[in-house]
Image (cartoon, rainbow, N blue to C red; front, side):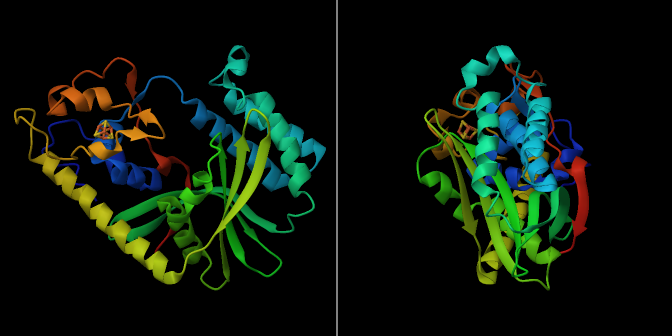
Length: 314
Ligand code: SF4
């Protein structure tokens, strides 16, 4: 646990003690990015279309997994999609977001049902369930499983819905070593210790201008590999704690902030410059500039703990 009572040079926030896969991934990408996003809570002050579209798609998938495949559930799934999507993006903007617009989503839902209605014979055990699993003493890892299913051979699978416009084969390959995939498989083993574990299935939908593709990517890991992930996650948790400790003994008076250092090999991701690049280019010690949230940013605390329903020991 991070000691929130230590003498930090900035206001503390309870979410500092909330860990999930996104935070771990951000930390491994760049510690300074983690600092801006999760220690200061800085986010862009406009909605990310990819995130909103992805969340809306998850809501539509939940409906299909909960109620099965039919014309009626496609309509309900699209209603669920729109109910969330329209809270962020109006009809006026739809043409700007092709091939990930509501029209594309409806077409994708119809094609999804056509493709999988004769193939999916699994039993859906539950959808959209959040919880925690302990990865170290006092360090719960928060998770949200999109769906868990059992096949005809009693094997348990976790289903993870993903959408993308990315055409390269690396889109599917990237999941093989993904932190979140390991975390979900670990959770599955904790939840179903007596069942055969089939693994994780990426339930992917790729939106291109010319077509929509639904693909499923099965991933499974040996217990040895999961153990390696588990121990690495513990090391990461300790490193994050170490950076908070460093933060607690520094101030805006020192010339350079050593806590949460910059990892400048990561500044370009997916052909885009990091949103914090302007700050990293000129601020040796960001603590001198954190009094005012920069233009174009707002403070929003990421807290996956809000939706939790399951608590697991490791
Ligand atoms: S610009 Fe580079 S160093 Fe700065 S937060 Fe982003 S990835 Fe890290």
